[in-house]
Amino acid sequence: MSDTELQELVDFIAHPNPQVRLGAIEGAVPYSLSHPSIFKAENLRHIRNLKVLVRDHPRIAKSALTILVNLTGDQDVLKVVATDDEFLGLILEKIVTADESNADLIAMLLANLSKWDGMKGILDKKQKAPEALNSNDLVMNQLLDLFVKGMDGTYNKNANFDYLAYVFADLAKHTEVQKHFVERQEYDDEIPLTKIKVFTEHKSHTRRKGVASTLKNVAFEISSHPSFLDEDAMNILPYLLLPIAGNEEYDDDDMLDMLPDLQLLPPDKQRDPDPEIVLTHVETLTILTTTRSGRDLMRQVKVYPLIRETHMHVNHDGVKDACERLVNVLMRDEAEDEGADDDDNELVEV
Image (cartoon, rainbow, N blue to C red; front, side):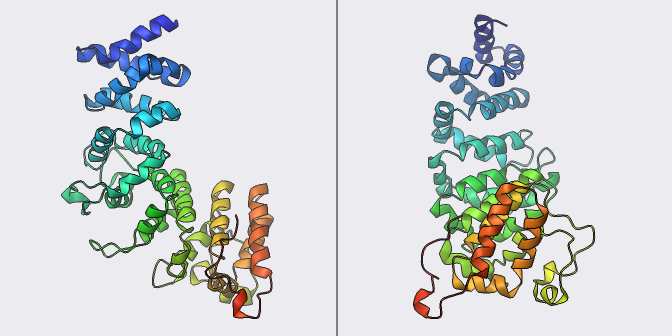
């Protein structure tokens, strides 16, 4: 198809006749990958049309959302979509609707939009939550509850909401969002991070990867490290160690000191097959050695032997380097005097 013909096809996505719109937009989807510049013509007129079409018939909306997902990797398109508060309100309202057929596409689009710095403002957004979601009016809490209750089609038969993990990961780069993740919420008396930590060994690669990155980014909130590591608070450590544990055997003395979750693992236990996820967890552990109490706890529960085996069995340069950095921290001699304690000092570089 020539550029002229393609431009004519894209022009038809805004046709008054719904059948013409449907045919045009479904035909245009592949070109959002192969010829994305076509959609940026005339000062992004087609992008504005696509945002309107998200309100259209579900089949038309599906194609519009797919094209927007494909195009929002472009900074110009990302800006015009992510800064449209009305459009953002629309898709946030739609994603929590239990019968929304395009919920997973909306989650994918939100994952792209969350790369825009201004999206941290989602923390202040409110909307009425569907009764079935059993959440409060903060959109951020609704997305977290949706992620938990909606997995495997249990809230919406058309969606699993896995891509919300990437939304959380990008938003958690911002200090305000980090603080939200570690603050107990009144409506359900839970700490948000504890809702998602359980997915570090989920069958969905997308879920595992996004949650791993979220945990790492929130860990930069150093003042919360005591709560991170407290068994009666967030208790994150087992959820970082289990994904990187294989079926290796350890000395009895080491095994007895390990966290209960790490003891007597089944012979078929496998560490996460994605070395990038393993790398993320090792980096998070390194961030948690920022404080003396964090380092002491990891020594006490024998994190070193597990990291040693991870270094030995994962053939990935990044993982090996990260393991070596963590081991260097755990094996070093601590200063005798309190003045050398860095509980409130600079972050360990990862």
